[in-house]
Image 1 (spheres, rainbow, N blue to C red):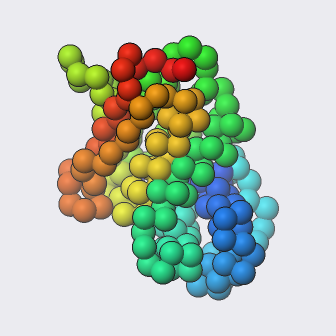
Image 2: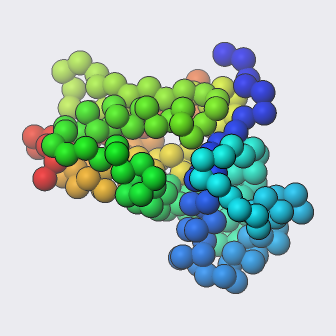
Length: 198
């Protein structure tokens, strides 16, 4: 699949990364993150970041890298925490309509499939349940723009999403990653006996 031109993400994606740093690491850490960015990035971040506006995906990538260095001494696993925070913040506010009551884990994650194109103008996300298996597969194709930090953020987001609706025995594990050379990204979701929400 050809690379999309100048990929973009919604402002809510950028804002949750900034808010994560401020809430869990404080203003001094945010100052270090901000200082590691180029002036044009700082201008965007210092302005009114609109949740519904489109911003360059490259800005998101550079912001994630700065967070990794300033807040985790280079440990990219902090991006899993960023993703979990994003799910908790956005699914409870901006995207609370995705938390319909009474659905199965399969139905819940299938509903989140519709969220992807509202936040990205590139790539795709597919959710399906393999036949005769009590698990869900979440497949991303970032069309050549996959980054390790963004893939780990996605892992955290889908874990956090399941936690937000109290799926019992939830596990979300990464199997493939485009940023590591696989053809696509694959997350495998499993849950406790019965697969029902509490």
